[in-house]
Length: 220
Image (cartoon, rainbow, N blue to C red; front, side):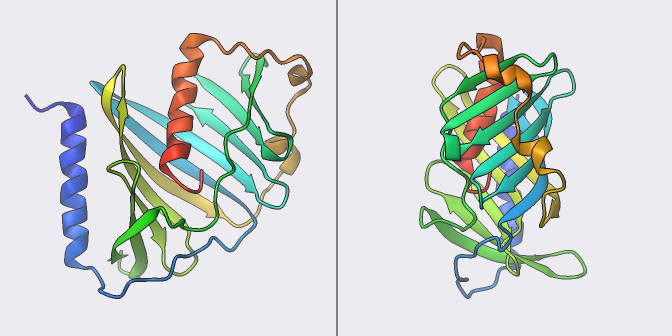
């Protein structure tokens, strides 16, 4: 019997085979997201034996090197404040419990040299031209808009020493080139003044999904 992860993998393969049929031949320049501040939502599907769905709504401020996310798994929600300028990240649960640890590297606004160009294709009746890039670190792909480098989707196959292979599929939605409320996204609550560095093990598993997404993409 084909596992859920294998079904997703085969779907991804067929998707990119279909995309190749409409591919353009010219290799595009590596693009950069023009806005220094923006927001976007990321619909995340992770499969391993059974699938897990999440919604990540994030704000990016490349001027101050501060990044925030609302993470919603339905039954579990938390916020992250990645303050690269202060070399710290805060994670806040719904009950205001705050944890902190060293900051992950800042996201990137430009397609890095570590991604290899694969193909370009059009989406929808309006013929939105997008480019597909392959991640060298795993079997994943990132798709970006040709006109403004807006991220469109991510597929990533990740190997975990304990869990084996898992597939992460990300769809990017509601991209806006501004941040609506910087204090909400980038200023941790008062409870973080007494933050602990001991992140509970059950919580670490969900937090690791975000870390893997960051490792598999250049903009998150």
